[in-house]
Image 1: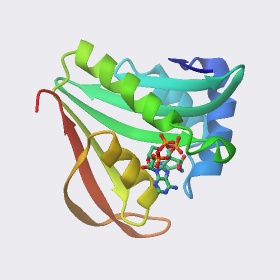
Image 2: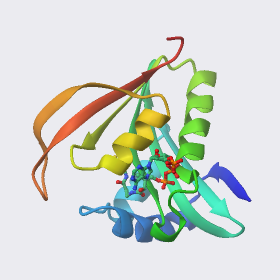
Image 3: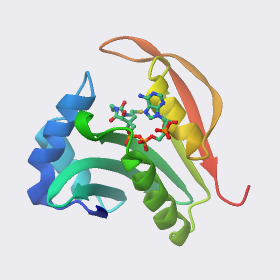
Image 4: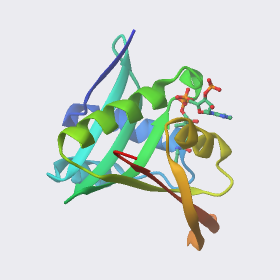
Length: 147
Ligand SMILES: CC(C)(COP(=O)(O)OP(=O)(O)OC[C@H]1O[C@@H](n2cnc3c(N)ncnc32)[C@H](O)[C@@H]1OP(=O)(O)O)[C@@H](O)C(=O)NCCC(=O)NCCS
């Protein structure tokens, strides 16, 4: 059974491992630690028994939130783990009176774009050459509560 809980410092090495599996430009251990220590960060993990198989990093400021990272271990994908993480992020954001959740995603990342669409996010526009390593356009997406 999948359990969603807040990430603690002891989980950072595993998050770093999942970063390397999921992204061409993985965050460093110190970058993840720094993010975790900020009061405006929500960092949730998804556990299958005692194995951390996915995580989401979200920043909150005033009535807006931003999904900074989400990834699931390759062997555990297409089992609704990321969907469960986004559902819990939405629940927490609603509780904190957040009105809108924003994110950006690489144009070629069709799996993530589809995930966000199935979780209720809609496309707001494109930011040209937003990413480096490799260079790519970003699709900007958002979810608004009460729509
Ligand atoms: C994107 C990612 C987080 C999705 O995680 P996941 O746990 O497999 O996603 P879910 O199982 O919750 O998928 C929900 C829906 O999203 C869509 N989806 C997810 N992966 C997909 C894929 N590879 N191809 C097409 N659609 C996909 C499907 O509609 C899916 O529902 P379905 O399985 O019933 O068809 C995962 O592929 C990943 O870690 N990728 C690498 C990191 C990354 O790109 N993160 C996003 C950065 S913006």
